Each structure stands twice: as structure tokens, then as C-alpha cells.
Amino acid sequence: MIHDIPQRIFLDTNIYIIGVAQENSNERKILELVGFQEPAPVEIIVSEELFDQILRVSKRLYGKDWGSQIVSRIWQKLQVIYVSFTSEEWLNIEKLGLIPREDIGVYLTASKGETQCFVSANYKLIRCLVQETKEFECLTPEEFVNKYL
Image (spheres, rainbow, N blue to C red):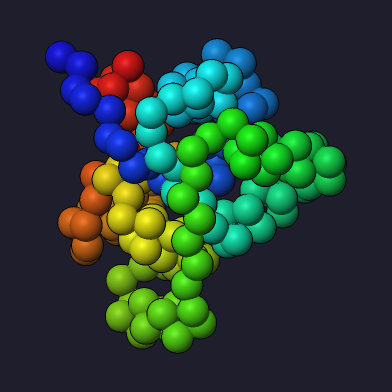
């Protein structure tokens, strides 16, 4: 049974990188669903932290211009909700010790954007979020595709 697609989705860095790089991947199917090719009725939560990660990872893997093209396409094609957070908010989450330090910015982006569904191939982060916050649905790319496509 296919469920109604969440209207506010956070896609982790790996969804953009793999989705653009690998044509037949679940990540590509997700990008197509949310509007990377054609407009779609979903809102995508983004932040400076997410863009920094996309640029940093893609530069390491594919060269400096590749990540810029992804970020540009996000702004041009997707219905984005841009959120920001303060260093104080970041420190408050770090003090709780529930979320790995390297994932705090991603978590805050999804949380402040009031996401309904968090999609990531980072199993450790997803497991942590589901167990500790229960704030939003957390799915791997495969789980998302199986549930919503």
C-alpha cells in the first residue's frame, strides 16, 4: 500500500549526492519525486549546514563545480523552506548527548523546519533520531521508496 507523501521532507546530504550521481538509485527516485525534474507539491527543508555539507562532500568526490550545480538546482527546482539555527541551539543539543556531534546541524535543520519525514542513508543517525526524539518519521532511501513510491 502506497501512503500519502509527507508534505515537508528533509533530505540528507547523501540523498542529493547519490541521487545526482547514480541514475537508477533510490536516491534519484526520491529527487525526482520531490521536484528535481518537474515541480512537485512537497516542501524541502534546507539550511546553510546542508549546503555546506553538499559542497564539501561533492568537491571531495567530483570537483568543486559539481556541488554548486546541485545547490543551484535545489534553489531553482524545489520548493524550499530555508531554516537557520543559532550556535546556542547547537550547543544545547550537543549538551544532551543524544545525537552524534557531526549530525547536530542536520538534526537542527530538520527539527526547526518542522519536517514530517527525514530521509538519510546514515543508519546511525536515523536510529538515534527515531529512538531518542520520535519527533519525525526517519527513513532510509529504500524505506522511503518502498513506502511512498
